[in-house]
Length: 168
Length: 190
Picture (cartoon, rainbow over the protein chains, first blue to last red):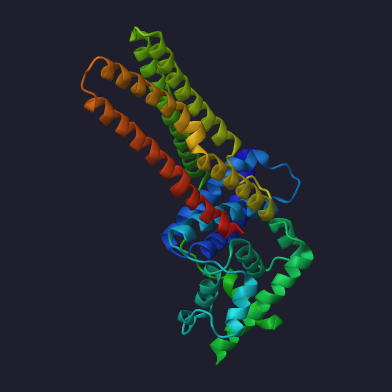
């Protein structure tokens, strides 16, 4: 049974899980390692899956939990300070955000923002990019829907700002 | 704004990642490797405790003085206590990615970090003190006997200094370096 569930996750959600990993780790080699760690965590935790939520929600939760642990360890190692979505929105609107994101393509700009974002806000950003609904994001993150809605409106503003910059 | 966001969502989902696929066999292998790492870490800690216990029990048995026998057994018991305490702590505070929501997971992680900070912050009491108390008592006793018998105490003083240095180093490493490292981790979660 465990193998069947794992195969289903691997078959159905490997694409989004790979994108989650590449949203938390920008070095390709390290992203590959993180993906393997995430899938190993999913395998090890399968006995905890009790159909209390959908398989998608459960596997995304495990993936994000693992990625958060990874971010904490890596940010400490690389001495990177992480900001909330609110702070990033403020930095972008005031033009103080890292100038190095200029002259790069859109995905690179998004990556630059994700790189500086705190783990839980990064999760909301990534789930929004995946097109998940506020309800699903709330189920995965544990935040309230109203909280998610506020954060998503900030994400939208950030996206608009960086797209405007690209069009200029 | 909605179109802009939809375009980016589509761009994001259609990006090509270089991350390769993974099969169940590789996952099983990784899982086994992870479990072995945990098992070897526990074995290493247990072996250190057993080593201290065996060494000081043996030394205790060889002593003629009852006082020195008791102090050696105290150190042996301290070695076992430290191993068991560390093992119990690592089992109790292990955080697993078990499918909890992110907020719940972060709370569990923070709780575990706080417990680890408390543990490392009190190393002088539960780790150093039980062992060092015995070692210092043994040295004190030997130095007293040597002075009484007009013998040279240089070697004993050097040995006492070594024990003191190691004890202070263990306290510094855990209570200063270790706690600071964990506090940084905790701060990044707040």
